[in-house]
Image (cartoon, rainbow, N blue to C red; front, top):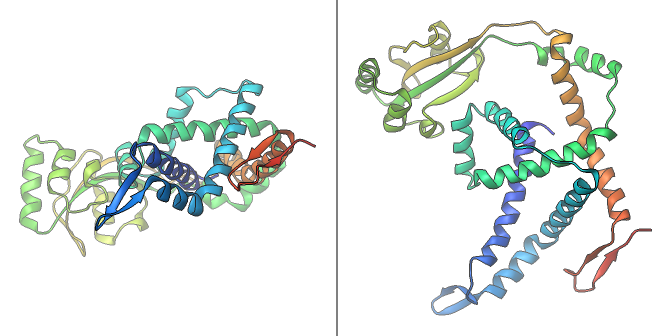
Length: 298
């Protein structure tokens, strides 16, 4: 499962949990009213069940299977493992501050997200012994995807976007006087996608930004601030924080990434097979359909 797919998977779980919490936080029978006509907690429950009940229940059953299997197999996930995975995800989205802002924008609590990440990592660890990856597979995958393991020249930068050159120069003057770049980004930048994260853009290649911005960023030394850079979006003040030189793909250096990529390509289908097996092993009773249907071990 790729990093962005992982975020979607965990975010979907968070949405379903939020639906359950909606029912819990309303201790009274009525949850809303329109012109005096009450909408009851039962109305809300019935609607939620009709829209998402089967999917939510399936997810809860799956989570319970994972939890019981983890206890049986003595699988535990440490906080260090969760932190490492969260850091990897954050890097994919331009840094920790940018990632936190993405979670916030989508209404996802970071602590709850980490709990869902623990479930994901537990599942991954349970499936690891079932997924075999040979040296031949790795070499073939490398040859077929060599370009993806090469590293293009990259720059890590932050920026402050303003409407006019005068404001850009005022911002630069404040930076040169010792004011914090990230703080000024929150105060001045009109780029809502990253202003709250201090203007962080993460790493990017030459073709990832508009030409004027890219040329300025790649010409700046690390730690330096640009003059105002005009683009179609306005005027940018750019700060370069790191650079990576271009590197050709190397099999030995890429082994860990190759193995992870192959594992991710296999885990979804293997999870489905594994879950089908567990449904046959476990006694599962589903009362949501009103029939008390059961899935029992054969």
